[in-house]
Length: 387
Image (cartoon, rainbow, N blue to C red; front, top):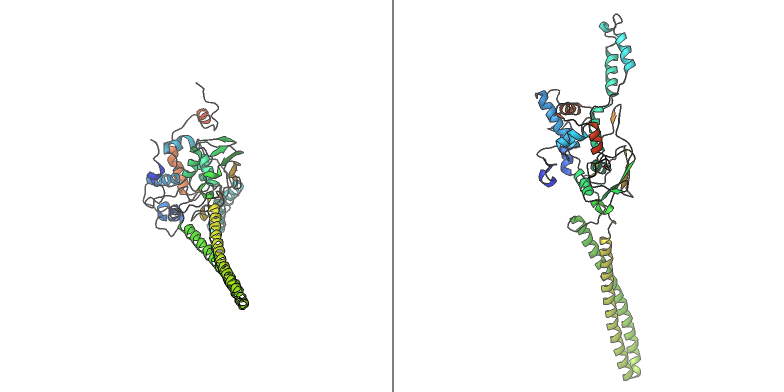
């Protein structure tokens, strides 16, 4: 069954409260509801005192984890193509465990309680030293091209990253790729056309009222300064004209003809000064408006970061991005070490949600032959049979 369009599904709905691969503010609130201990929905993910059956616990865990990591693909597609066969096995503290096994047979140690505190500390240390391999269940999903674009912070959601790919704005190793299901290999380079990234486009008037208000205030300020400058110039010209008129009046005593000619010249000078001041102010205002309009229409000049985006701005260790060239390199596959997992997830990397989800998929997930999987998941599809 095909996946419904994103605008009809409403994945970040506050009615479901499921975290997604998105920077939306609703999604940020959903992450808080599912991960914060003060949230009313936090108890639903804690199964130590739950009345749910094992089946209900597994289904709830699968719903939440898959809703975050693999909501943008169908369930059967994920189970068939992107679910690993097994999880890696990591062993820690074998020597300490053998030493502890021998120590408990010493007479009187366990009965007297001399080893009780030490055993608790050792158990806590061993628990912290475990590698969270449960989150590596999503390692194949993290290799997808659309997920890598989102992880590299070139898109505000995985669906936006998918639109980049389907519209032909993404290149992998220099070739245009339109298949969002492509899995990258270590060393692959992918790049995005900067014109397709909304964060790098010009700010539209209808998009941001605050920007519209800023532009109107700047225009009003520029007009006020132009009018003030024109008024100062007009006052200077009027003062000069008044001085000239006074001098002409003083010289008018010498003759009526000279007085008439001087008064006519003063009036002409005043009118010329007024016309020059008006033309100058109008030209300055028009020039400033043209400059502001040209700066606004200049693509790539502005960088606008969406609201509530700061909690999501991080890059995993297995991606090396370059924001100047809008490209990134998939360095290696994600891994895990004691107490740390490289795959970003809002839930505990080795908690009950991940383990119960793995148990669910192990029971219901279909399998496919490795050779057919390798052939179909090849990004270049060079092994397909030609008609």
